[in-house]
Each structure stands twice: as structure tokens, then as C-alpha cells.
Length: 400
Ligand code: FAD
Ligand code: UDP
Image (cartoon, rainbow, N blue to C red; front, side, top):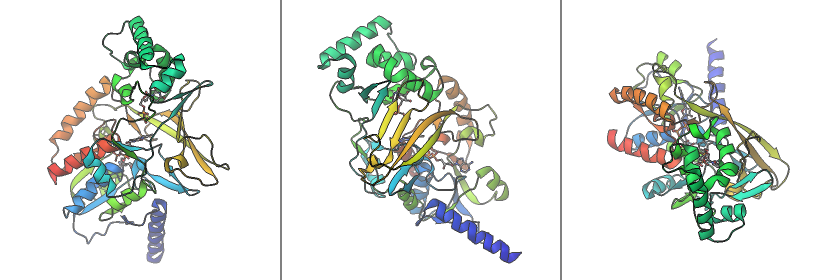
């Protein structure tokens, strides 16, 4: 029996190790009860948990990182398929204007000079994104910024919107009704499963609007893709921590209530509090990935499908993030999905109703002395990677 158990443990250990494709982070298969208590139990091996672990380890703290998934890295996880680094949870382009964050992430990887310039497909028409002179010129057959501005102004005036109160009004005020109808309404309503009138305006302000012929999706000073993918970055961040995979916090903590002095929780805050005030809203996704026996499928890393009747929002061709010329290609269709409690809560839906509810959970979190909430789900914020790093670094500076 003892022998069987030891073989089982070894197999589990190897399976964990292989699933994570992991060379650096110390993946353990069970806890060594003779070891001292950890300083931190970090729930979630995504970017926020990994940054926290790295900073804590630098200050001599002992961390145990657990994740319910079978691999490290959360949503930035990349996996090598056919020699291509596949972004398993959707396209991840690193961009920031914060030099401190850029220098921080560059300690862990070399970044290439990829610039995200997605294409939007509406029926048989193709447009450049973000909304810029290329988009306006194609939409209205015009050439100059002056012509584009006049058309947008006329459309905004006709809509009688003075202070935009929701995503629809915000979009029309920024780019006019034609672009809203063709490139925003269908995409947004399928992405969020809600009418644009019921969504917060800030979501559309994520995208630049420019009166120059510049297809860069971001306004940030620094941008790129880590050569070799994101998983090695997280491996390096976790190299001084113990990591347990396939481990859900709520089961684990019942068995090991005294495992650490403090808990850093990067999962959903409402779940932590057993939904006592009700459930926060999230949006999920479903990914369909295929290997295609061709060199180049769509000629661009990201192509958006903005019509409502196309069920997916975008197709990602992963090799283009790293300018790959492998003989095959890997593409992923991204389908928006209702969050049902069993799939992943990829996006917090930060509308007014959810934000009121979140404030109640935050009030509980603020009273905690030994539990710290961070990351996209812990802070219930539509954070990009740079903001996750910024927020987690400022947290660690304050508390460790
Ligand atoms: P996560 O990566 O979600 O990590 C949380 C981890 O906690 C997960 O691994 C989860 O399994 C684990 N966990 C949760 N609950 C428990 C529990 N109870 N027990 C154990 N483990 C638990 N940002 C950009 O900057 N650029 C982009 O191009 C970009 N594209 C994106 C595309 C998509 C489709 C999505 C969804 C996000 C994108 N982001 C992008 C945002 C980026 O993914 C996040 O900012 C970042 O991954 C958040 O890291 P995190 O650690 O907070 O969360
Ligand atoms: N959006 C759109 N059309 C597009 C691309 C984006 O209307 O072709 C809107 C949509 O509402 C989306 C938001 O802009 O949710 C933010 O887009 P972003 O690419 O930043 O979304 P993410 O990568 O976070 O899913």
C-alpha cells in the first residue's frame, strides 16, 4: 500500500511537472509537514500571484503558491505547439507607458518589437484598427483629418449626445454612428452579452481614436511580445517559491488552516466571501484552437469579426506575434460565453450595479489583517498586464 502510494505521488509529481512544462518553479506534489510555516500562501499562479511571490522571496519570505489549474501562469499561459508559442487564453500583447513596469518585466524576458495592428472584418469589408485615418478613409472614401472630423461631428450632432452616459453614446461621440454600427455595436454586444446602452463608457475608451494614419492598437510608449512566450517569465518569478497545482484554495485551506502567516488571494473576491452579498458579474470565453497545414492563414496576428451574426469575436494566428515562419500555423477562434461558475471568469463586468456590490466585498477585504486581495479577480478590475504589475508592486512595497 505504502509502495503504491509512493509511486502514485511520483506519477502525480511528474504529471504536474510535465503539464506545466516547467523547469524553474519548484512544483511540489504535497506539503512537507515537517517544514516551518510559510510566510505567504499565494492563491493563484497568474501574473499577480507570481509578481507577489517574486517580491516576497527577494525580501526573504517563504511562499507557497497554489493554483487550481494544472499549469502555472494563469491567463498569460503560453504553450509551444508546432514550434509556435500559443497564447492559450487569448492574445496577450504587453504594453505600458510605465518605465518602472517595463524595466521590471524585462528582467525576466527579452521582448520583440511586435506592434499590434488588428484588422476588423465587417461582412465583406476590411478595416484597420484602432479607429484612425485608415479606418475613416476606407469608411467614407476621404483623405484628410479635416474631412474625417467633419463627418464625425455631423453624425454626433445628429445623435444629440452631449455627455455620453453609456458605451453606445460614448462610441458615437468618439467616432460617429457609421463606425459604431459597423465596427463596435455587433462586436461589443456579442463580447459582453449586453446591449451597448447597458455597458459602461470606459470600455470603449480603451481604444485609441487618432486622426493620423497609424494602426498601432496602443498609445503606450513600450510594447512587445516576450521571446519564447509568457510561461518562462512566470517560471522565473516563481523560482524561489513552492508551487502546488490542481489545488483549489477552498479544499486546501480546510486541510491546512495554519499553512502560512498570511494569504494573498488572486481569485474571485465574491467567491472568497461565499457570495454573501450576491454574485458579481463576469464574462467568460471559449477558445477553439486548430493546427493548420499551411504557412500563413490570415496574414495578421489578430483579425476581429465585428458582425453580430459571426459567433466569434476574433481569430488569433499565434506565429505572427513572433514573426514565425514555421511550415504549419496555429489559429484560435475566441467565442464570448456566459459565465456559469464552471468556466473561467475572464472579464469582470464593471458596470454600476456590480461596482456597488464590489464595494461591499471591498469593505470586508479592507478589514482583513491576514488576507490580501490582488489581481484582476481579487480587485475586480479590468486590468491589463502592466496594471496588474503596477498594482501588485505597489502593494508589496507597502506591506512586505
Ligand atoms: P489570472 O491570470 O486570472 O490568475 C489568477 C489565477 O488564480 C488563475 O490561474 C486561477 O486558476 C487561480 N485561482 C483562482 N481561484 C482559485 C482558487 N480558489 N484556488 C486556486 N487557484 C485559484 N492584458 C494585456 O496587458 N495585454 C493583452 O493583450 C491582454 N489580452 C487579454 C486577452 C484576454 C482574452 C484576457 C482574458 C485578458 C487579457 N489581458 C491582457 C489581461 C491579462 O490576462 C491580465 O491582466 C492578467 O493575466 C491578470 O493576472 P492575474 O494574476 O490577476 O489573474
Ligand atoms: N471593440 C469593438 N470592436 C472591435 C474591438 C473592440 O467594439 O473591433 C470594443 C469592445 O467593446 C471591446 C472593447 O472595445 O470590449 C475593448 O477592446 P479590447 O481589444 O481592449 O478588448 P480585450 O482585448 O480586453 O478583450
